[in-house]
Image 1 (cartoon, one colour):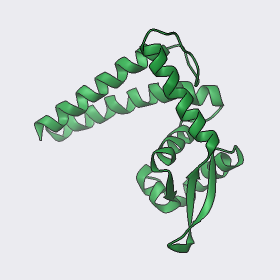
Image 2 (image 1 turned 135 degrees about the vertical axis):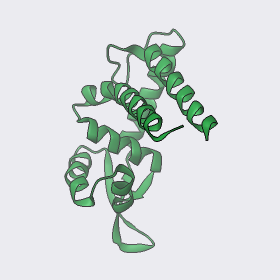
Image 3 (image 1 turned 120 degrees about the horizontal axis):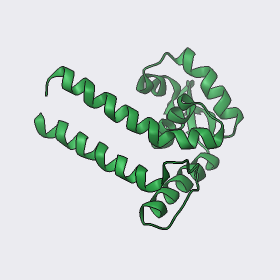
Image 4 (image 1 turned 90 degrees about the vertical axis):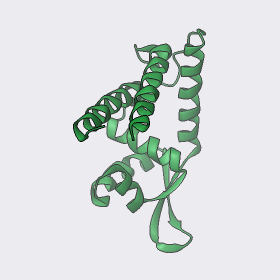
Length: 147
């Protein structure tokens, strides 16, 4: 795949991810940036701030304000890295784990035809989210197959 095709694929995947995360942001009164940070932090479990900033492509100083709001809201906790006491580590909280679990359950339930609407719901519904996930998976497979 050429570079332009890869950029187009990235753009499509990015739009779909934002569409999937928007209901959570709206329901919890967060910005999309905050939701993306939470998503990355949840996937990592525990991550140094500098590495989290690197993953997100932003300077640590830019991330500090976002992290302050998420810590204040009870979504993340700050700690020290046991390997380097000078380094700050962000850790998921039980509140964040419950949000991610509830959102995943609502999407699975809606995709199975059981209604749903928890975890932020949104007007798109879980079945639309499941369709979007399948499209993203197919596009990702297509890119990998061309390598």
